[in-house]
Image 1: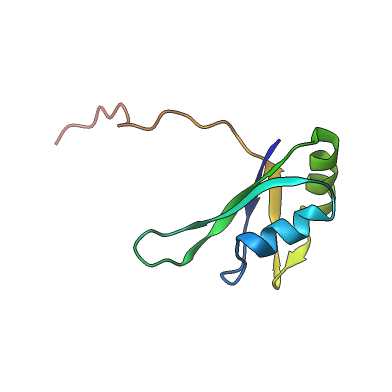
Image 2 (image 1 turned 90 degrees about the horizontal axis):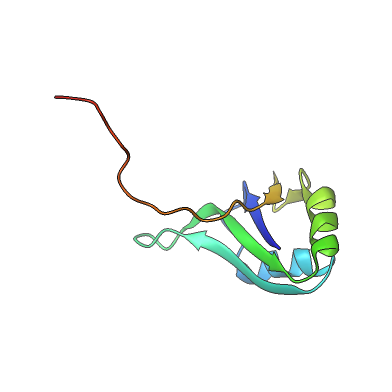
Length: 92
């Protein structure tokens, strides 16, 4: 199961995220999203866990908990969608 983790402190890295979620089960991957120009955390990331019941328990117990001094937001990740231009009907 893919999990979204938001409101991360800027010092939280991939390994720190993995460590927190590993307490609930096997973590396949943990990624903090980073700005490609500055190399600084964007404040959110994704964790992938193999067991769905362990992932749901992690979501329930970690949502709203403090990590690095900030209450994190933990939800099931939404599936990726195709990115592209919006259908913009505005005229200039």
